[in-house]
Length: 148
View 1 (tube, rainbow, N blue to C red):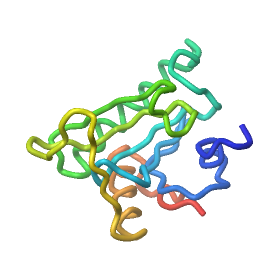
View 2 (view 1 turned 180 degrees about the horizontal axis):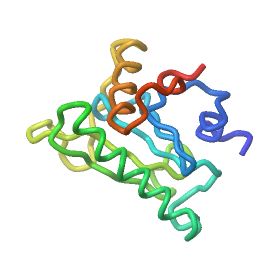
View 3 (view 1 turned 30 degrees about the vertical axis):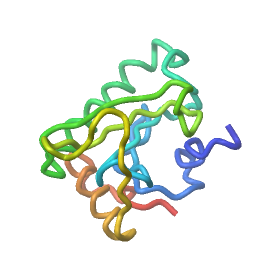
View 4 (view 1 turned 90 degrees about the vertical axis):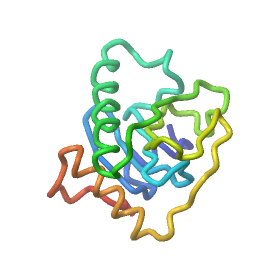
């Protein structure tokens, strides 16, 4: 879709800190993370909400989300992750996306009033994206990191 920022990120026309790339979707850092290492996973086609994701796309997409959720704690030293998605309400970009947020007991996240934390620099965001990408199993691939 022409005016969808996530479609533009998938197409490579908008920069993003890419964590992993798969035939099922693209994973990249949220630019306004709840915690550093907060990843957004999007399917490649423009799909607005989970109920629009066709049955043939479900297994590949959720396997991709699962692999990212496995990589994040190992890469960042967190205890686990919070994995969630909004459907229409509170969906800041109308393109299906799954949040994978690193979590550690006592991290201060309570309910759905989430503080946002900025990356100190593009270099910090690139290093975090590369760390998660390596855990995902994509080390040595040149398309990981910030896409210009």
